[in-house]
Length: 285
Image 1 (cartoon, rainbow, N blue to C red):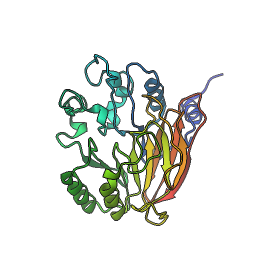
Image 2 (cartoon, one colour):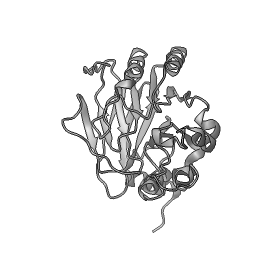
Image 3 (tube, rainbow, N blue to C red):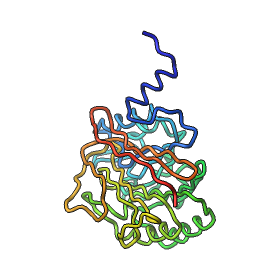
Image 4 (cartoon, rainbow, N blue to C red):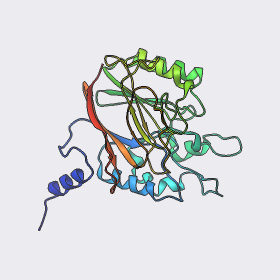
C-alpha cells in the first residue's frame, strides 16, 4: 500500500499524540534536563522533535557531565537535540555551568549568539506572542529582574510566556524556589500566561495562580515543570504543592504549545511506549 507524503505526515503526527491539523499558528516545543552520554532517553525525545515542526525551546540543564571525565560541553547534546539547533532557543541550567569556577562559558561557546551572552537572558516574538528567556543559574539577580520588568513593559502583548530553569512552584525532588518569587510577581503584574521550567526531572502543571498561591483563573500565571528531556526521572513528592493539577514522574517527553493570537493549546507528548499525556487550552488574559 502506498501513502502520499501528506498522509505519512498525518500518520506520524497521530502516532505522537499531536493535533493532526496543519497548524497555521506558531508551535513551540521542548523540555529541560536533557542530554547525557550515559542515557538513551535524550535520543528518544530528540526523535519526537524529528516529527514535530515548530520552534524548539530548552528549559535548562541541556548537557550533563555526569561527574565523569566528560567530553567537551555539548557533545552529548549535539548527538541528539543538537540536530535541531537551527530552530532552537536555549535556556541555561545549573548543570550547564562548568569548570572550577562554574561558569556558563562553555554553554555560550556551544550555542553561540543563540545563548545571548554575556547575560543569557533575552526575549523574542513568535507570532503574536512575546517570549522571555531568563538565566536562573544560580539565580535571577536584581539587574536581570530590572531587565525583565523593562522588557515586559516595552512589549505589552496580549499573550506572553517566560522560560527559566528554576521553577517558582514544584512538587518534585528539588521543590519550589522561593528565590523566584520576585520573578513570578513580575510575570503576574505584567499579565504573563506561563512560566515554563525544568530542574525537577518530572512533569507538573499548576492551575493559574497569584504569587501568594491563591487560585486566580482571571489573571494567574500557569507554572509548568517540564524536566522530561531524557536525563533521568525524579520523584513527585507528596503532599503536592497547592494547586498542582497534573503530575507524572515516569514519562520522558516534550511539551508542545500552539500559540494562537489570543489563546494557547498545550499537550505533553510522551516518548513511544508511555501513555501519560496532559492537554488543554486557555485564553490569554
